[in-house]
Amino acid sequence: MMKGSNLPRLAAGLVIVSAAAVLAGCASPEARYYTLSPAAEARPAAVPVTGQAPEPVWIEVAPVRVPERVNRVNLVLSNSSGRLKLLQQDRWSASLPDEFRDALSQRLQVSLGAVDTYQHGRPGAEPLYRVSAEVVQIDAAIDERVSAIVHWTVHRLPDGKVTVGYTRAELAAAGGVDGVVAAYQQVVINTAADIAAAVRSLRS
Image 1 (tube, one colour):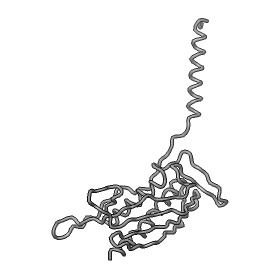
Image 2 (cartoon, one colour; image 1 turned 135 degrees about the vertical axis):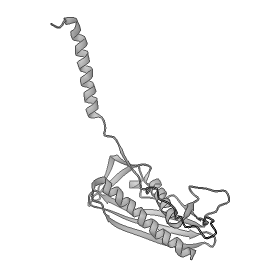
Image 3 (spheres, rainbow, N blue to C red; image 1 turned 180 degrees about the vertical axis):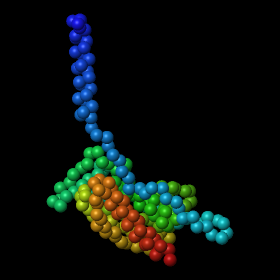
Image 4 (cartoon, rainbow, N blue to C red; image 1 turned 90 degrees about the horizontal axis):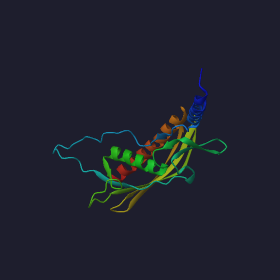
């Protein structure tokens, strides 16, 4: 038989356990983070007959501008009626402008054998090409599509020659949020390819 003196202590213990269970059930889901930057890729390994490493192409990738409605760390979706939805648990690892600039820079450095002086400043090293980009439109509908238009400019600094262009993308985005992120990454890949072609044209 349970002694009466133990009842208050037992009741208090049950209250604590119940409160802990309620709090655990109400805890917010853990945030998921995504990035536009590619996985580590090797730089071109071509070496001249002399055995000396090729001189890198010095570029400067300026900060990228994006529409204000997506200028945040949370992923933002839209639907056919133009309504926006902010995802609370699905986030970029940095703000979208920083993600886009860093991913674009990495792609250009790999494809051109270049060094971005914006990231890797070196005393006395002046960039030969300055790259500017602005995402003027980017919309994403989960399990549907991502559409984007990116305006970009490449300045050849020694003589001021300029190439202006844009990249348009309409991409399928099946597979939930992962599909949207993959489509965003493809937008960066397409933009970097177009800019790299412009740099090569200015070098010739």
